[in-house]
Length: 284
Ligand SMILES: NC(=O)c1ccc[n+]([C@@H]2O[C@H](COP(=O)([O-])OP(=O)(O)OC[C@H]3O[C@@H](n4cnc5c(N)ncnc54)[C@H](O)[C@@H]3O)[C@@H](O)[C@H]2O)c1
Image 1: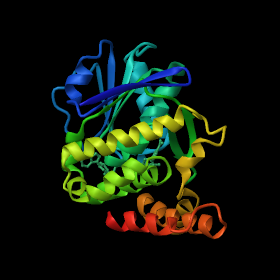
Image 2 (image 1 turned 90 degrees about the horizontal axis):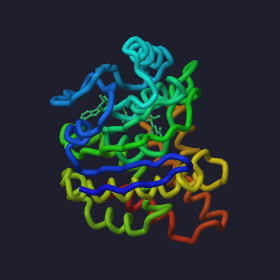
Image 3 (image 1 turned 135 degrees about the vertical axis):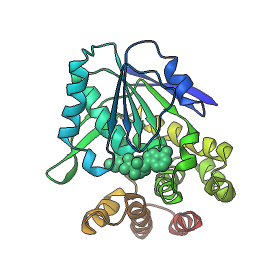
Image 4 (image 1 turned 45 degrees about the vertical axis):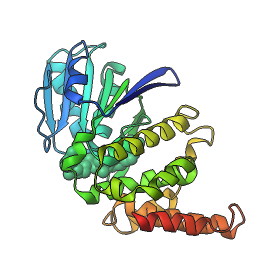
């Protein structure tokens, strides 16, 4: 189990990795609305309001936000109460948005249940829903006060979903964290076999790497957070060009290779970088 805190602008973010989420959430004092993916079975969780959601991109819609807000309003939820989001990136994005606008912000706890949610979507404070068929047009920057990562959720996650999140982990290893690159190089079998110690190390380093960037440039105004977009300019074009049939993780993998090649050709990176990028991506 690992826990640490980061100060991001004016918010303190507590991170707990590798602890039973029910125990951790039940220890929070206060009224709690738990908004969760319908695909998950939550047992033993104490809550004042339970709101099950469909997940997936279609759930990232204003109508979902309004349905969450309406239920909290009817139950008299107030500032000082908690909203707990349990699910993959789509659930975290929509619940984060709802909690940021209701009474100008209730305390948000993120409990990511997909690998992508744990290493990326649950961290950094970007919330959002899609609008007119375009992704994340409506959104806010709103930091969760707590992020609870229970690796047991990954036991039921299909290996394809693990691979999609791994693209973002590889991105951190290439841009920010050589030790993570070395760890991934040496521990592929353990990671892909879902060995919980190996996953804890990978998730811990990814959360630290991302938060380390976000706390320096929360709102992408200083040209620092842009490092997290490595592979994403070309990746987004591939996703959009395929009508979103190519999953995000695979699109940004191709994007990272192309962007590394451009950097190498233009003399912005050393020779051999493209090989390093390709080698690790092919390993996973
Ligand atoms: N806010 C951010 O910074 C940020 C960063 C990256 C991605 N995102 C967003 O995240 C979304 C993608 O997230 P995602 O890949 O988690 O998709 P998702 O939320 O659609 O989840 C993928 C699938 O996994 C299932 N699932 C969830 N937990 C599970 C578990 N423990 N076991 C088995 N199945 C489980 C879900 O029901 C769903 O079918 C996109 O909308 C993207 O825009 C946001």
